[in-house]
Length: 256
Image 1 (cartoon, rainbow, N blue to C red):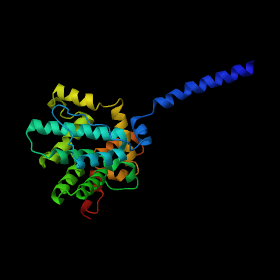
Image 2 (image 1 turned 60 degrees about the vertical axis):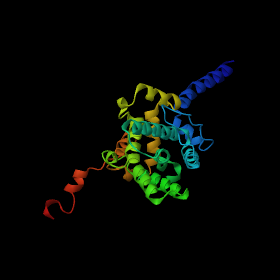
Image 3 (image 1 turned 45 degrees about the vertical axis):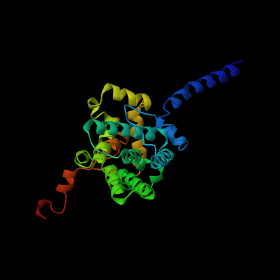
Image 4 (image 1 turned 90 degrees about the horizontal axis):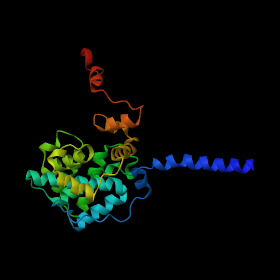
């Protein structure tokens, strides 16, 4: 009798312990287990903005979704909407199709296929977008513009002075991640985007985990950027580079 009670008690405790393990299952982990699959059906219209319906746009969506899974893909779609809405509000002239491709590929460098890369993830995504556009017959000049927009989208202070797609891509990404420019969008616009493509619970933690997963093998590529903050948050052993120290210890310091 005592033996049976002990077995039941152990089984009960095991069940209790198993619950927290399931609770920490993040959106990033779920997406990593099920990459690819059908691209979620696009909303027909969000606050007057539509996702381009062309072979180029559909091919880009499939390629990116196959590599990223739902979590990063949905973020990229929201970035497109924020960017397009900002462009409309500011009266900027831009090609929605190219803006959509730029938004889709802007985090592509974080995917598992770049697990051996030591380039900046922005450059990896920019390279992939440019190659994709060239394969689809987009002129070199336009492909290079998209390369620049993606490569510089995390370099605050530069993109706003460039061509509209670069300006809007950076603005859309910052809006979706940290709410930069939040009040520039109406409550109706914000509600419509969230209704169609909602930020999931724990979005901030999950997104930082996605960044860390794509960058932990190349920490040197984050130095001098805001991504170093993410590395320091996720890895207590990470040391930010000190530019002042580099100058003071250079061969030129002290008149050498």
